[in-house]
Image (cartoon, rainbow, N blue to C red):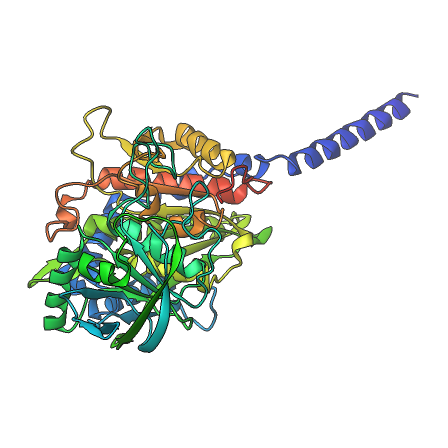
Amino acid sequence: MKNLLFLYSAILVLVSCGSSTKGNSNSQTSNIEKVDPVEYASTITSEELKTMLYKYASDEFEGRNTGEKGQKLAVEYLKANYKSLEIPTPLGDGDYFQEVPLEKQKASEAKLTVNGKIFKNVEYQVVLAASKSINMSVNDIVYVGYGIDDDNYSDYKNIDVKGKIVLAKAGEPKNANGNFITSGETEETKWTNGRQSLSSKREAAKENGAKGLLYMDKELFSKYASSSQRQAASGTTGRITLKSNEDGIVMLMINEDLGKALYSSITEETTAKTVTTNLNLEVENKSESIISENVVAYIKGSEKPDEIVVISAHLDHEGIKNGEIYNGADDDGSGTVAILEIAEAFKKAEKAGHGPKRSILFLHVTGEEKGLLGSKYYADFDPIFPLENTVANLNIDMIGRTDPKRKIGTRNYIYLIGSDKLSTDLHNISEEANTKYVNMELDYKFNDDNDPNRFYYRSDHYNFAKNNIPVIFYFNGTHDDYHKPSDTADKIEYDLLETRTRLVFYTAWEVANRAERIVVDKVTE
């Protein structure tokens, strides 16, 4: 009997242990609890960050302007680092470069005739966008008021503009209370004025099927006309855009004289209507094709390799202007070298048998300074991994300095933007990782939806966020050296750069290793 009791007890112990083991395997944190990432985070040091950044932001790299010599040196530098770390590329055959086709925009001139009268280039109109050379004649155009297409107000409602040239004017209507109709608020929206309204109204025309947009802006015309004259003299606009096989919309900014020649009631009338007019438009596109590169490396997940955590930073900067090199140590040399250190930490963990459950993509994007071009190409044209499999994007853009305008709080801070906009899970993971490992001051000042700086839309994470992929944008704020030749490596605060880089690593570690994929519980339209 004594032996039977002993045997029975032993069986109970075994069953209990098996049940406990099975329970732990389903726990969200079991793998993380078994592996302490502190050892791997310790490989992220201010000394290594400093050594790399003094090289990456040196004069040798000539400011890393998109498509130019310095940018080519930068991508080769990143490739060499990943090869030395023995971190492979997802592209295969040792190819760490995702080619990004771009166009260097050269000054275009338009020849425009309305009812037999010639309206000269610069004096009456300037070309803002033309994806190809065109020569068209039409007998009517469609006036679309302010050219707005929004949920609360649309100039395109009940009128067909497919294949048409549309005419629109600057501004945005208000209600009887003085609030903008689109938002119901007094603050300006993306439709109101300035460069953002230009792009918003161009996209509205394009999405409704128009092939051309003539845009009257009395306030901005003289500024753009002067710029067009300078560009014509130099032969280039200085703009670089993504090259697309699609036919884009042609857009001209016109002055009030031309606007009234097209439609005499343009300044008073807002109702959309078809306007009879004989218009001939010729535009020659002289753009030059160039190739730039995103740099990609990755560590394959041990359990969920098809789920991807993307860690990104932009590799480019402003290049050389007026003989001065814009080194971009903080913007975004700091984010670039941070990713290299994070990659080294994950690789060390993998070599120790503690590789991440999910795959980690280290993504260095080009053309951020030209309009988030590299990340847009990755997200919209050629995602190396399907976006539906992309769990989160942690984007690092300027984390080596402090914000001189920040008067409250300690220097041991970081601005976080976007962490709670799409996923409560991601926000909570970020907060918990900070409390557990780093204990920095997390400042959400620029996370406000009404932030006038609109930083949420101004770095590469946005091209993931617009696809409902949860993001965190790590940012130290601007400073007096922002976009100036004086943004140099000697001004970086390397102790802060180290701590902030470790925070990103710890957050990525938690996201990559939890049992369940983080939930997207807030969706953008």
